[in-house]
Image (cartoon, rainbow over all chains, first blue to last red):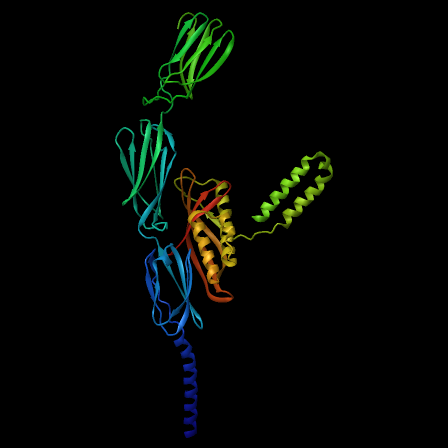
Length: 295
Length: 191
């Protein structure tokens, strides 16, 4: 009985020794890493390090890798510049073995707008012709994924301005609008809090409208001249816009393209007998004149 | 990419030679064989599988060819990223990354080299979902769900192994002949 007891005691001592052997390295090892699940970009924080002695600390982020020796049993300071980029970060602490954890850095408050306005020139009064897209970034140029309301403020050169609000989804929002009836620059400003970014789209006259010409005959020549060429909203078509005059007479068919100068297009033709002359600008046909002594 | 450039240079030289009529007849067969040999000897890059889903994309639908190009260059980009992470050589990143994405990766690789850390990534394939394509075609946003096995080393010492799903927000913009990754941010899969 006594022998059995001493044998049990010996076994216990051995087990206790084994347990101690197992326990001691654990004591020396870094304790479980306790990191926050989520950190705002650029925000310093600390990681409590249990245990004692020294260990090697690694921080691996999207644009940053840190390796340094740390003292266990104290707090490990993660400085602002260590966590500026949004994304997943990996923390590893190694002494006799390694333990690891991850945390996510999310974008800070919106600080920049990346704003695209398309196209740069657009005809007036065209439905769904202007597109605006805005990407929201924080001060470190991380995409801000938290939904935010962006105001698109539209200020035409003439007429009343208006505003359209759109909420971001995964850091981006967009809107589409009609061009306004009057030519000239239209300023579109994307506004989010105190951040704004402006772009300008140039509205130009649309297709010609009610195109007409008059003819003045002098001997065997005729001078053709359009009325001021305007679109249906009354905007003058820009100088340089091509107007085509087509003449059909005994000499055959002849077409001449001429640019608008000072708002009108002018052309001289020689005549060979009776003639029929038409005018066009783009896809728009104007009036026809028949030169047989009667206009 | 380098091998393609070498192949292009070789082809240019060959074409210049072909324009000389004295050599045209005699060399044409040899040239054909040579081009074939160069093409066959070019190392095949094993790209990670990329599946692109662009259903319901707004405000502009995606063209078939654009979708193919995006998937291919996204796969190439991840291949380059994985090679750079393991080798510590960031030169290849400029082929597929620009802007913030490139700057961040280049900085990360440089700091990996300073600290002696390198990362081995086993890529099990990407499921890309296109979420935004601007009307003018200058920007596309995508969401990438991928299973990655990431082994982190310090020198030869394995520090950590993780096999987990990852999710990335990606911003791609078109260049002269390809789509570049302009922004690549990992986000929590349980946002």
